[in-house]
Image (tube, rainbow, N blue to C red):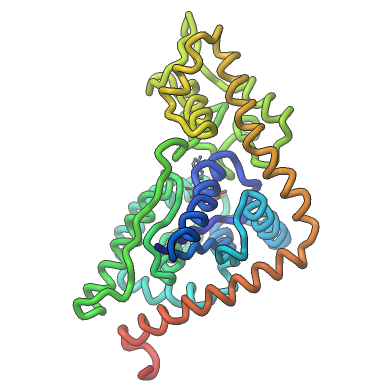
Length: 339
Ligand code: AQP
């Protein structure tokens, strides 16, 4: 079993990234180690440049994200952890795969529509092409599984189509590229903004007050949960209900922290006096879950040379795999000399 996922070095990573993706990476690394599998994680700096960004900050954020992933439990001795731009095979594969990607499919991508709406100066062609590069990232490693949050479902479906179209066109009845499955968590796949529970918690679109960052101190976590939007039901009702987005989101977060279902989390709060008790329970659970990550992050972040060394070594390992796939793709497509 081979697992691959990418994460952007943008902004500070939030609770949605942690529950929807990072925690799954750590679990995937453990599963891969148990079998004869391989877990590969990529910090996708080339995706981060598809929207307005600051070059100096991009490098800082790349080290921040590397340190955070390791603090969360990724072990560079047990997985491959690398920076996307260090593996040019992925960018070449992106171009090759563009020939089997339908323009109309890219036009339908929700993420492109949402992100292009908020770009003030330029809607880059890179933003439009984002899912093709993402497909190349994953397909270069012929992986079976991609751990992601719910927002990435459509992109994974597209990369499956790209792999299948490529195989149908160029693999002569065989399978050069592997169409991967997404692995979206049953609970916590879409954590919502605490101030606007109709929008997902997000690096770029969410409110500061409504976003819990992985590195927030416990007091900050408590303050943000205390101010979380719920509803004015009288008497207050702690239940999972599409009409109660704020309460349902808090139950989802609590359930994800405790490894139970949101309904079970609601049942545990049957004796609660009101939403204050729910907010207290969820803020304690989140603070407890994130504290060790924050502490380890603080120990690691200062040593950029060590972080850089981890990324360089990871890229060497990644290139060995990606180069083989790229060679077969080039050869099947008739690109370059006979190999
Ligand atoms: N709210 C969320 N709930 C659950 N999972 C989430 N993910 C993102 N938001 C939520 C998952 O996190 C992984 C990394 O996403 P990314 O590389 O896009 O990183 P980001 O830019 O920090 O994520 P955002 O917040 O989603 O950014 P913007 O603001 O750009 O929209 C992915 O697996 C994603 O599903």
